[in-house]
Image: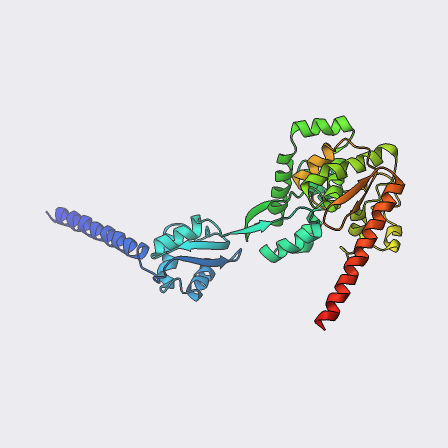
Length: 348
């Protein structure tokens, strides 16, 4: 009888303890924190402890009971699984909801738009501004041969291979992942048909993207890209220097600006006024239209072109025609300069 009562007391005590633990767990998991409406944004640095995460949440008025939040994270086994980065939380009213969102939530994504014709330096500075990643780190990675080879390409630099597009990255994204994404998007643009076309015109991929970058630097309007390309193809075919102004803009320190005669004599392998053929590497990161123009130029006999002043160009076949077009441009510049001076005097 005594043993029976002893056993009964044991089981009743165990049941009470179990119910108590269960009730305590439910209480902790469903403990209500601050009732903030709508979305909440919080930044969790890498490598912080649960206590430090709790302090961050408390400082942002997201928890009013730090102890209950920490117990919840430990009960669920998530003490070391909270994400680093900029997170968006959706009305986390209880400990359970808050911990789950910190572990499984989607980091806030930042819109990053890379424009056609931007160089690596410009892209790196823009990414630093948007995502806080050192521009020097981006630039160094784009020259890192081990990293470049890991992407499946063999080129001296990733200039030309960071495809202009709108991307969405988390603030915690690594520089390697960002660059890898841009290169992979570039690779998706280059179809087998385009690769066959490179062979057909005797271009390597590096030569193709280098010419595309020059076209990108020259053209404003899409409907001129293939005609501009035809001029460069024609010059390459007859062994004539490209004399492409964008290659000079690439090597001057204070560009882009109006070029001076002395700029055309700068000693550089990128100076296409001095050296025949294409420069060693691309000078910017071209868009798809310039890539297609490099591969499929118009059929023409044009050897020259000069800006008209309205974003378009005058294309010519002879030096005499080209000189005439340049004189027209100079007259237009002088006219605009006079009109500007007159307007300035009237305002005074």
